[in-house]
Length: 245
Image 1 (cartoon, rainbow, N blue to C red):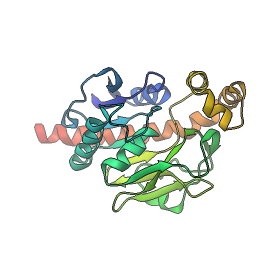
Image 2 (cartoon, one colour):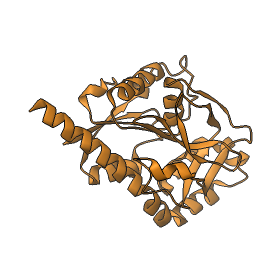
Image 3 (spheres, helix red, strand yellow):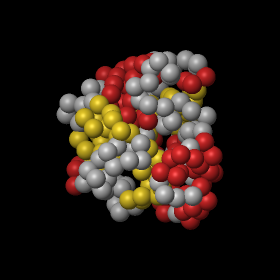
Image 4 (cartoon, one colour):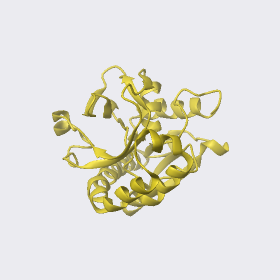
């Protein structure tokens, strides 16, 4: 069985749909709730690493003392060549871990079901080449990656040029948006981030409604990303199995 280590930072940011899609694709998830003090084991025990989102800043080590360990796991995964995907906060943590920088988005928070601006670089990317199109995704962030790690490649940009998706190392990817969430998850976010909702100029009801209305579109757009990640993890699992035989 292909094993994927999942690092969760926030009770309101579970693997959700992405976890379901990975399991459907033959992966077994080991979800470690880092915010509760659960250990983040060595990536050597796994075939892939998924780092989820959260409300905290990516460099808030004082308030979230598990973040250095998460960045260590990302660096370890990069060195091992283990497929790694960071979502929102996870994307920012991966960028910092590999030598990049994160800051507040100059245009302010971006929240809602918004376009993803894929670039031509995706045509040669082993993870997203099959899924890039004109689809939308749920966005909910105030920080963005402003400095990329060495040799990183931007795969998608937002309307103000901010990084929406990037290949941060040979086997490490990050997406600033949330391919994993549905209307139920968004409903929990509107309850805990009323300030963000107000800053976006929307109501909680509007955000939940637009997410639910786009459910089929979002599934069609992002289930293939989970499937592509699972294929890479299965490939690593098969290669490791051959080495161990």
